Image (tube, rainbow, N blue to C red; front, side):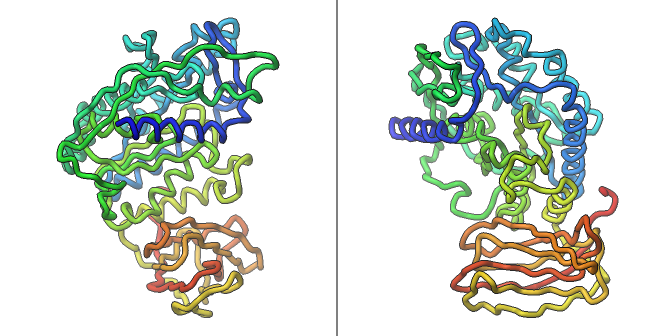
Length: 443
């Protein structure tokens, strides 16, 4: 436990380096808040579009016999609005009402949703010596993570479809060892660059310490050494090990979920695609997926311009990619293909590619499915009959055979051929090419 704690501290300190450029807001009693939590009515359309995307993913998963449970991490500014003084007016009316408005829209769309905002505001731990959010950090504390896990469990138990799926997942018994109240390193809002000039934070960060240990004492990796996961949690940095949330969820659910925790620079849309692309999802579909999204990120669409290109997607392209990955079986298309310039398992250079040609064209409701082995990053160029070129990148599990599904979608016309670049590899293989149809009812 001591080693695990210090490992968590080291991870926490490293995470601060990523957020060194954040802008902090100083509140009452030395509480710090994150400027990027602030948004207003101008975000309404983007939030609506995001809910529509989540709704479509929910329907696609249900069509493939997978249940989805969505939750939003509520704004720290709202949960601790009394600590915002003298900046209380930064929490505008739109932010005040946003969580409940979104909750209603999720309900109208038939999306299973865990309301953390209500749970956090009503919690007796909210103003305890171990608050639900770190005082000097954007993230929830171990106390907040435990409450989130308990709320997710309660939602599962009280939602018949979720309960039925959950009861089909494998039980793994965990014991919770509590390590008392400890001093945590100050968080990602305390860097000199983010604080107002001359401001120095002198307080101490306090938080719980606990550890979930398997009752059988079995030492396991993320997937028990196998590409199998019947319960998956997709989340943000709030789901990273250093927050202790994964251990809270393991203990509360008495399960061993696979965790996909992606930092804010990549975003929740990339997190979902990463999970869908990975072997545990593609080889053995889960019964239940939990998707943790930051409320402040719900105004950020897949095409958010301030991300690296490989983490940024055309909004419709993102949906086509996710849809293809969710499809369990190929719905064969009548379109034909021919594969040329095959690398055939040999060493590849940066300029080498496999070319797939569609003699009679294709349409945006098609995707190309194939197996690959030998690379962890594929670049795909899509050519239209009008000679336009678009590029997609696919990050894949390293050293594993993967299923790659390329949506034949372009904003510039019908795709007539694609080129698949595996990069520099000692050996690359691509085989079992098929053109498949997307489920038209969703689009």
